Image (tube, rainbow, N blue to C red; front, side, top):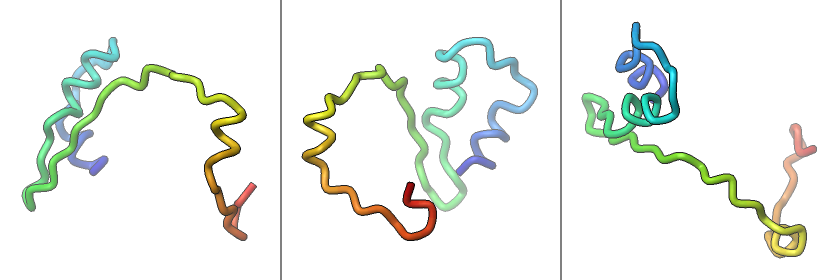
Length: 63
């Protein structure tokens, strides 16, 4: 996916989040894979809510 995204923004200054979103959003590969994006609002997750998620650490870089 990244190669298709970078072909779209080649030579264009990435000066704002809006510009980046517009250049990434709605890209398609020749096989029809659609790429879309949105800005993360930065919503915080409480420690109590995070503990409810059952995470299993992998033996390879599970830290």
